Amino acid sequence: MTIEPDRLEERLRDEFGGTAGAARVVARQAADLADSGRYREDVGVELTNGVVLDELADAPDGTPPDRWNWWIGALDIAYGGYEQFGIRRYRT
Image (cartoon, rainbow, N blue to C red; front, side, top):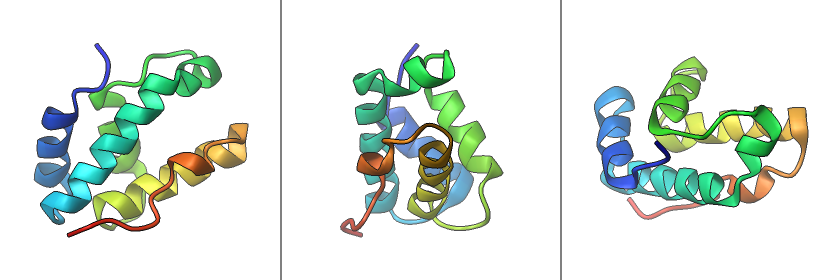
């Protein structure tokens, strides 16, 4: 199973708090990353809601976008080319 944006958005808010806009932008970026196939190529597994939630749980405290950017930064250091999936701004 791949990314389900609506379900991911709901789970992000439940687990990490933040605004609906913050969770929505992370869910969209996760869907874009999954659709790109980049994560699957580099890591060898499909990007799913569960993978995103597990990885963001390892991040330092913060909003879903803060946690997402931390994880994307780690992927960028490890594999390169992930900066395009980072979040720069979003509507609350």
